[in-house]
Image (cartoon, rainbow, N blue to C red; front, side):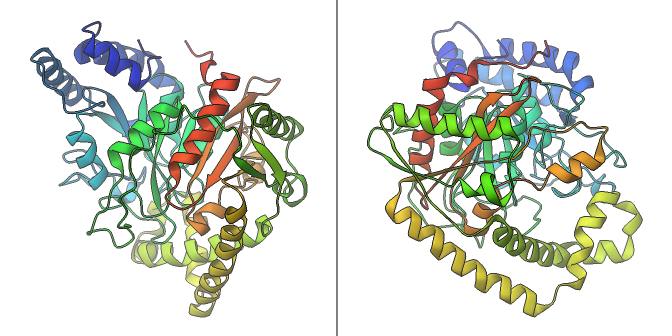
Length: 461
């Protein structure tokens, strides 16, 4: 039961082969067995989830359905408000902070019938981790619990990959949905900036933050995005777009699509681990075999994007955290404090200069996307490192190509592209035009069908 996709769950409910209460009972049993090893949860709401599952069971038996997510469990990163549950940000600073209202995305999930199963581990305030000096232990990778699961949506990635729940929400400011998707071998989408409301989500960087879905299949990713997307006038960054039906192209294949392969990201800018590089070349071969036209393209160097992201993120994060960092610096974990403090030294000129350069690199990416339907590039340059090797984690963590698309706001999806000889996932990233998330998902679905990597499961039980 625990490996069923959300789409399979909905079909089983409709055929009366499974009930939400039966599924929830099985998942809670699995969580009880595996989560002491993985630490995906900060707060498991077993009682509330079971109560909601029993209600959904009764509604389905009576022929009532709120939609394709009715009775489907979802885990929620612990910087997203769920009414009545703590939103701690994995930090001592907010350890007693109980949300009074649901975030906009949780309101949408409840309207679609989904069941919130609990709050999930994150890096502290979505920036400081993996850390061992926080009120809760860091999540671990189900492919090998000695390794980190990526972050900052770490519990979301670990829990979906381990079969603790089929769907999860994460957030992405510099790659924090796509990093755990890459490390844990699942599908993580950073939607177009403004497509999904951030109201009720604790901010890290106002102009870089995104909320996105993590799932085991591309179809589930489209399904979850359909549920959470939409304009929200209460979020200043929300876009007034009518984009919908994100799964409508999943069966179309990639024949005659133009795909631009950004090879210099992993060949010159940050030379990738050989198994990562080999897997990326294989992705290009697979898509060509499926009928796509793949050509090498260039974008600004990764160092350019990283510098812009760092100045903007640190400046905006400092505006949020400055009072606590002045009054309660010792209540932050060491990594979060170290990563947030540089914002105190950023000037207005630094911030304005970064925003001006941001406009220029956006124009360059837009120029490439006039000639290509989707861009193909690396996500992580290395498999995930060991949890007990902080030096290697510090070395490899910034070796990634996700940050460019937080700077530009284009939709970007990371998914599994293979396993190393050591049995750890490696990944690929697909990037599309603004509000054309459906085409990004289309390419990902074609690659998923052609390779079947999504059928591989972690050896965790």
